[in-house]
Length: 255
Image (cartoon, rainbow, N blue to C red; front, side, top):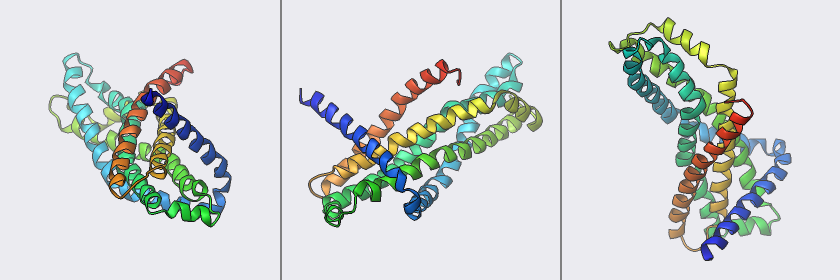
């Protein structure tokens, strides 16, 4: 019974924080400096690691699929397979895991520290709304940054797949054939599919991490527990929501 009540309490808290954050998005332009500061932090923490992950993800996809396709004389389709896999699924998921692990954990730790050391109470005392001052800039920055990171990782992943396709003797494609097949299969709808997923994943990660951080109670030891809780919850919700978002996009003929 306690677990059920805890589930509904957390669900209600997440939805309440989401709705309040949407309301305070009206103040985004007046707080643009905070939004850009968060965008800089997200980019600084994720772009180098994202490039490395994407490069080898694309390479592994080509390495795994290329020889199998070559057995059936279909090796020219490696470009399309790598491109679609990255754009529609692997890119958004890997970028979300990276954002949750690198940015979401830091976000939770920062807000949890402020909550434990009563800085949140100090903001309320000064009549500064914590959601407007702390959550809204992080929310907007994450929702903007995650789709941009997905595109960035997609392009680098395509390049990684191209390198393996050219140098691997079992595949041995030319760059022209690889990119021609990629461009034939990866269209605007496929790219839009991944960006829609990334936007929703950004909403989930930012709201979950901010909610857990703001609701941290106790001493400094609880900060580490909150970070672990927020990252794990973000991973689970991203993967679960990925299934349902895909079903909806299939229903709308966007997948």
